[in-house]
Length: 344
Image (cartoon, rainbow, N blue to C red; front, side, top):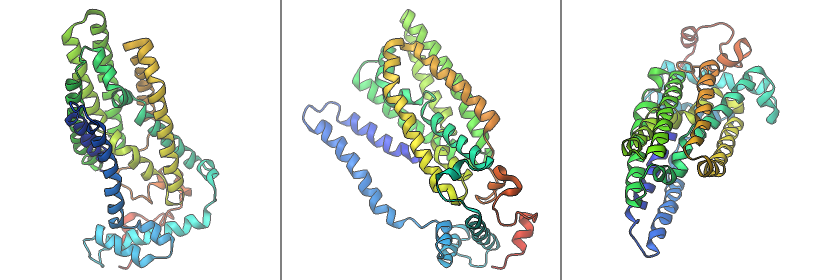
């Protein structure tokens, strides 16, 4: 649910602006800015209540604290839970093996075939999360709505506010709650192909409105925007951060997530500086750029994305590194055998 909660802030922002849209005093901008300042203040207070990562604790010789965290959140406080004991043992052994075989520095991200594939997936996830057509609405909803005849600030604010609520509900229900039911790759596929279909219809309806002024076509564009974000909610809000974190072993997770955030930020540059030029020059024809990106996206998901449903974070390494993975129990023992051999 981590990244899906972005929409909580989006809902507050959208409806705060809606509430101040008729203000003529400085309160029209002071209130939204004050709300933006309040959120990091709440985050600053809340961070002190977040538990430390048990993997980080184990890596820093604080094993007892690590076990306490696992026991609290994975075993309901039961110190003798066998799964919790197995998980603790696996984390310790995997970190020990990673330290023995680790190579310091950023080149580690490209030194093995497994790491190179991880890096490729990270870059693809970062780019597609920002440049699949969703950035058009996130940054230029005003221009899109104006292009189909919806120019009233009131109407645009209502649509924007409703869209944030819709996106939040879909992301929670489809992305966060179905991730362990349908798996990661299937969610990505639903999002990719669903976005391609809805965006293509969106483009066609925009073309009809631009050429004929048909109001029904304009209304269909609004419907397609909601459907587009509906299918996008199956994967991109929740898995944009969760998937890179899952496929990275502990020893390079911090570096890999730093690359994720940097690549995401760089991809957003496209939205901010290329989209306005494209929309102004090509109007609805600029949408064909995103249709091409979505076709490439679907192909990449189909042929490259790895399903990570089921294994623990440590065992996911086997999907990328095979028999060379630095994972406890990689000598051939099964999960059940490993569990039985560990004492609580």
